[in-house]
Length: 177
Image (cartoon, rainbow, N blue to C red; front, top):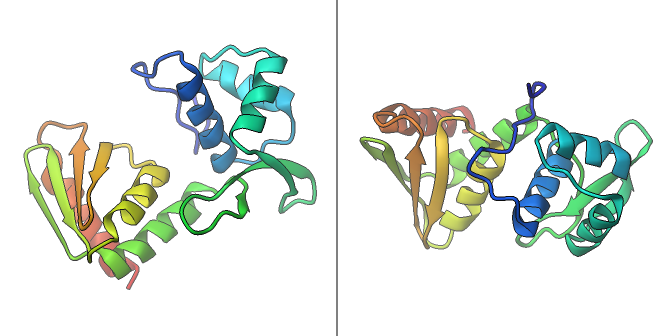
């Protein structure tokens, strides 16, 4: 069973290097991780078995670095995406939700739903940025996002969940204003 704030690897995740490295990035972004042994244990909790040598290579390949955490100890961090390439250590769900609300207030133009799909509109060039924030915020009802230049398509887990998710994004936009 996952602890609060952690999400297990979905059953649909393949046991590939790319999937393992994506899970490592997610773990490092979601919580402070102080050692490779701790990271290996977190991966094992998610059903991902890895040797220390493989884990060490993965950390180098994803560009993980050790930084001083908020409690003073050294923790692993991964570089930010997009324009901000500074290392980022684990952020809790509350911070991610606040960031998403702020971005929705700044970038969300419309949110419309049909069955289990939601179409979000943004100003030109902003869709990928907002979609990345949605993906990082880990909204359980959202299966995934696809972003173009000014349009994001979300697919919900519930076959009739589009209306509720669209309403949630409109609510986030008003909260972040």
